Image 1 (tube, helix red, strand yellow):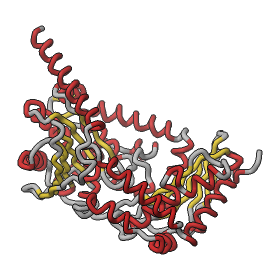
Image 2 (tube, rainbow, N blue to C red):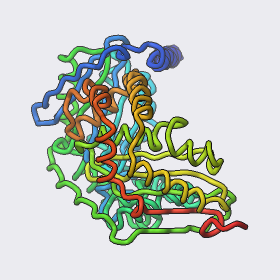
Image 3 (cartoon, rainbow, N blue to C red):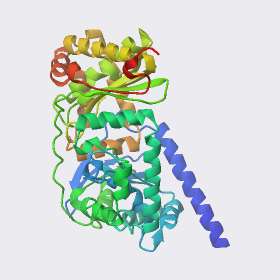
Image 4 (cartoon, rainbow, N blue to C red):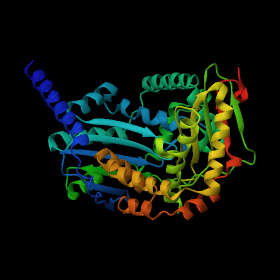
Length: 452
């Protein structure tokens, strides 16, 4: 009884401290006025590691990033997502409940995520050695020695099928899926990370184990660390993690997607008053020399919220949509340029026409001097808030390390933005964006946006 009470008090204390530190990340801003200093090295077995010291808080964030996103699913869409969901369901003698308790006992938080290019397994812990060491041990066991219990495999497989069925009932998800399929065709980027019912049904436990053995290996890993420790300790942690990973091999790069020869104009019936609209085409890859130019230009076109041209033309001037936005999403291979809006079903066609006209005018004429100055001020002024927490910095480290961006990426960001000119935007958009060749997806409302 005494041991139980002591354990309860320890858990409560850890939760309190971690919660306090978690909240502190929003109020104690150690990096707003200075770009974080990034240190890089490779572990003894060759795993690249990026580290930022953040001594303001006694907290540590660790992420292991793999070239193991849904683009590696091959013919079994959803395989990476399901594999990562299963990691913390069993290891050695521990089941899912015991693993959760191990993290909870020391106030640690575990998570995983899967995108098109990369996957990440993350740990947040207090830096006190009595709490950090057991948290790291459990984290490493989960990552390197998962047992993949069959009962949990069947349970999570069923959950994936439920999530897919639910997604198929949401018009926004239907539109997004149709958009990616239209742009990417047979390329792996076309498939949703959740997968499809047909592919989830085909995935076996051996497929899960094979994916883990092939992709979650040292040769395919990146370690990123942010927190209140010194670089010596960070190197110890990186070695501790990397030495427990199987060596393996780095996979070949994904093939480059090819632009479709036919312009897709797709209407998907859905019983709703609102229509979900997506327009877009292939964009640029991460690290492209025109990235900053297109970033600033798109901020003016549709990425700057209420200050963007699309919002002014589609929402403010004509009241056709509550929100309209556009963005470039660079990936290892060219990611999409995407534009989305919601509108009343019988106004969908008019909204699309106004949107295309706005894009064409921007491509032909570029931004005004006033628009450019405003966009630069907004982006540069808001940049410190994008790196004001350990988790934000950890995300940037993963981005920088995975896509092999320069280590001074955060330092030069505002200088790159400031240097963009009107002529550069006009030139870049005329080369990268073809208004007459945009994929068009409309989900819901009457076909063609006819008046009912």
